[in-house]
Image (tube, rainbow, N blue to C red; front, side, top):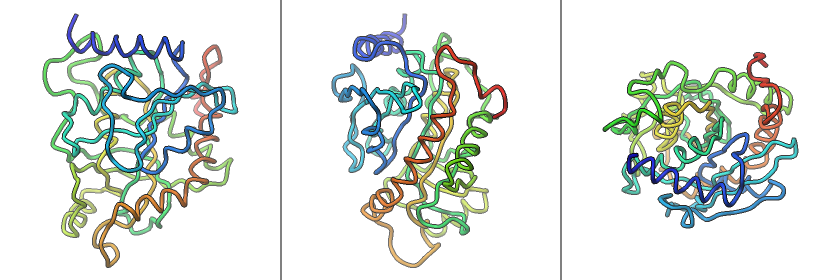
Length: 287
């Protein structure tokens, strides 16, 4: 058995002892969106520092704890309040360690959220964008190196990284709850510096609608291990050069706080539509 498998299993043992069976869905909460974890009932909270091998973030807006509880619909949810980033100096294997632990635990679905800059000029500040696809310009991929075949294939297909069934459910949730949801392509850069206006013009030519510094490694690792993945970006600011003026992380946090209510409503409607253990998989019905 490899060192990676040993490390994953040690973390899974802690989660099983803490929360029991794997939840129906895990949600990674991006910058400023971590408060959603407080909406779960009968919740238990575990700091990342108490999970073997799980890295903790030092970025403002990323609390660094795993909350497992029950959604109003009855679905069980693992909410990850915070993530680590490549720009913090972590190797990509550590950036995706938490997602791999969730998959190893048996969590079938993963919703990735993030704060992003808007490249598409039709997006207003505070808009929510459903990720249809991504462009990886991080210069890193979590699958580089020896492949652990028990986790997934050496060359996994990435045609549908973001599960079409989950995307249909998200759009249905948007229509039902009245929170608008845009579509778009998310482009990931390494950071931590924000992009230049020239880079944003190039990214727009490539077909990107939003830009950020996360999500893509997690999506690749989750897809590698067979999880169904969805992603939602909160457009917290226009990207560099779209409007005059500098970019600032504090402004990102302020916008995320302002749209937190709409984000919660949409997320609630989405989770309510997910199948639960012992129930028919509604995603197969093309809902």
